[in-house]
Image (cartoon, rainbow, N blue to C red; front, side, top):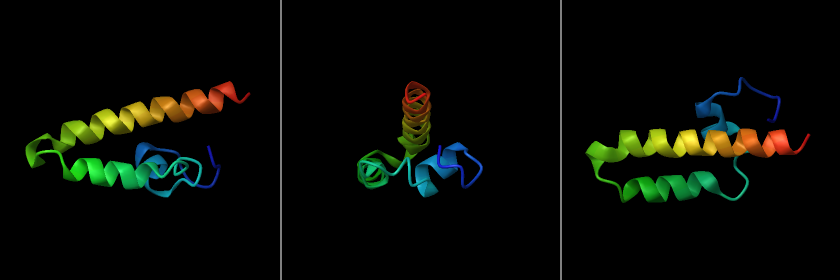
Length: 63
């Protein structure tokens, strides 16, 4: 996406300027705080997978 770092889920969610558009990280942190602790791993996996598909699709459509 941004071409600066290895583009894995952690980079896309935490460090990628491209992925931070729309203040996604702030939303994720707030939403995660409302999820029961034993369900956060599933929540994180679901959201990160969905976000990755969205970002890849968005990049693919820009070609």
